[in-house]
Image 1: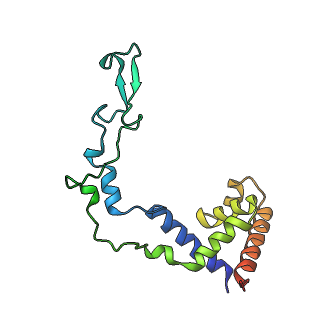
Image 2 (image 1 turned 135 degrees about the vertical axis):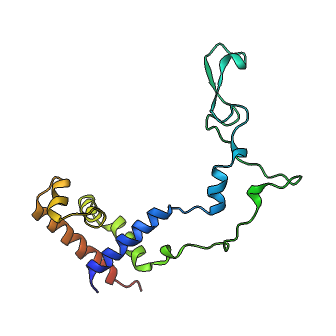
Image 3 (image 1 turned 135 degrees about the horizontal axis):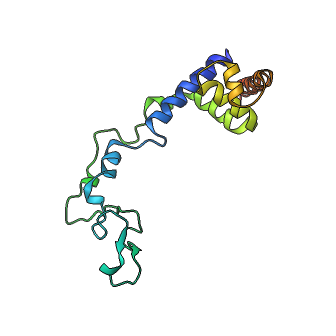
Length: 167
């Protein structure tokens, strides 16, 4: 097993996962975030009210309905149709294919749980930033030899943990 190709696959998986949003939202969820009906009608989506409008001596007050967020959750009632309750055309429980890469998941778990903080910084820089190792070492304010040593240790630790079988 080539550990560098496994780590590059992990980096591609991580970039795709972060691009699609994690945890991912459904199309319906994204639409509902910007629906005008979720805007608080009391404060007109501003999150605060002018004090004189509600009989206060303060210049501004936080809206009690939306708690300063400017949006209110859409309540589902049985008496009318709510667009938030319309089912999307996606399969229920569908997870995009980018998340089914078991090798990348395992590498991610090893990186998160077994590498030291220095090794994580070097590992994320190596597979997440463009450029030579010299540039990356300078970016982290460490010597090039230290960078290579930390990356080598990270690769060894990942390879060791990937080859262990749970019995």
